[in-house]
Amino acid sequence: MGRFAARLASLSRAGSAETEMAREMASHLALLEEDLRRRGLSPHEAALAARRAYGGVAQPQELHREARSFPVLEQLLQDLAYAARGIIRNPGFALAGAVTLALGIGVNTTLFTAYNAVVLKPLPFTDPERVVRVRRAFQSGLRGDVTYAFSWPE
Image (cartoon, rainbow, N blue to C red; front, side, top):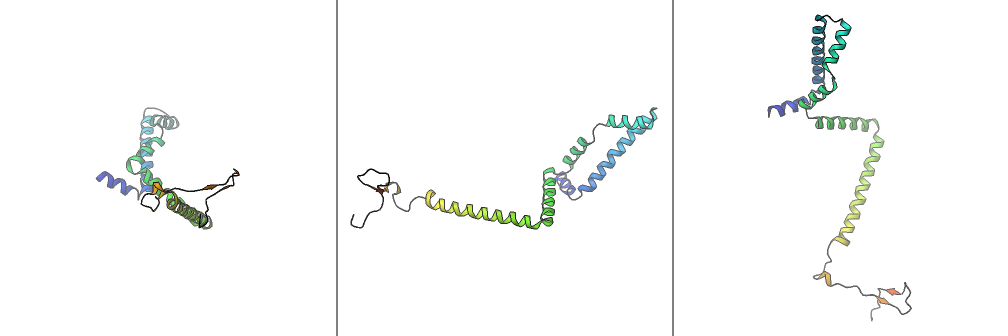
């Protein structure tokens, strides 16, 4: 639980953790460089050899970020901040997007409500599978000679 709390607390101080990590990596490089200078290398050669011996900096930084924090939550917070800045910078575009979403959701809700009432719900009869549809066809055999309407006496 202590590790979880520490990771949660590091979300609020991500900038200071980055500078602390950069300072620590720089001190490791400086110590390695000084050790190589004591062995007889020139300052320039010692700096190059120290960087070569230390390896890449990006991968250890990324591993340290993952260990000290919640990368997914941190990325979500960054994305939300970016979205807020975009909305503040261009409110008309944000309003157009919100109106488009509202209209799309409203139309889909209306269409589904109608589809649900007409197709998905069973008929309001006690025995709906016995309901039939009666049609009348005329002698001519043409396609339009079918009707579902009947007069009252028929």
